[in-house]
Image 1 (cartoon, one colour):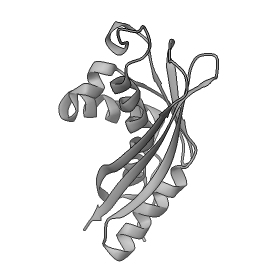
Image 2 (image 1 turned 60 degrees about the horizontal axis):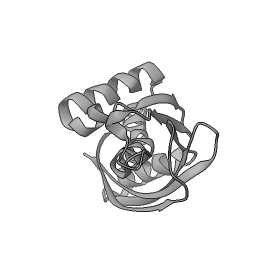
Image 3 (image 1 turned 90 degrees about the vertical axis):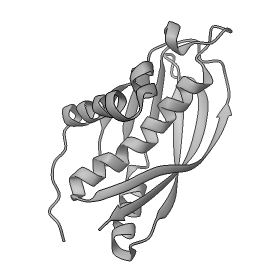
Image 4 (image 1 turned 90 degrees about the horizontal axis):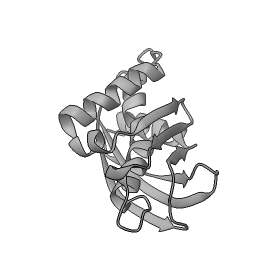
Length: 159
């Protein structure tokens, strides 16, 4: 079994920046901020500004989708580094429910990181792609839930 390595918040912020600059420019455009990452939790903030709002003066659907994408997906990169695996990662699906207009900064959080870790470990053991549902909550600055997402994370460990 491979040794686990400690991955810092600073390192994951750098990885997110690199991802936005070189691989997915929409992430760089929205400028999400990774505030917290642990084995279980992720907290991402997207500022409410001209580039992220729509004509109704609320956060645009695309910006909300980017936040949910990052909150659910950053754990795949985090565990790939901590476990020393090369992981092929994608989203297989998404279900979103918008409860209220997001008229301020939005914080995206997940508390199911260990499910992603289990999916990566299972994929490494059986050498197949594994799908895992991850729940993301989006809250405004008052702590009110403005949207919920179920992201279907699909991972495969490359040998």
